[in-house]
Length: 111
Length: 113
Image (tube, rainbow over all chains, first blue to last red; front, side, top):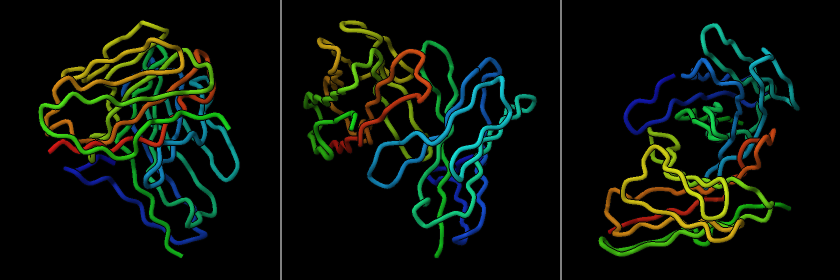
């Protein structure tokens, strides 16, 4: 979703639920996408990536889906845990080895 | 454990001061980046560097400069700090063709009063 003012879009889930975080990207020529997780007081950390010649990639408890037709990326987290609470960013490779980041979504996991 | 280290976690500076933010990486990465992160605006690229002594402007370079005299170190300079430069500053590094994107530092929260 879009951020409004100073507030991040927030997804609140219960522990054990599956979470889906969405991202719309802007450049149809982007060929590489990454999801990052940023915990409070820390820098963003790599979670999973996907290249544009794929539409799905799975990691440990995480899956990234890419829909190039509508320029949409999603991150699915299975069996969400309190330790998954963080801000999640998508990023696209916009050329020259630089990444363009989305504004982020805050995931809150309740025990 | 490989890392990107930012010299300060928190800084408070006065308007008009010259401010140096330091970043060091131990991964022999060619590329280094400075971003600022503000609520609702996400990460915005200030400057980046592909090699020693090389620098490129990002999306918001105004009011900033950078220095890269050694491969492992990339410094961000605020020539005359202003209150609108109060922000979280994130340094990152990467290697061309890396399949893990950037490695980020923990950030420096700068407050200009």
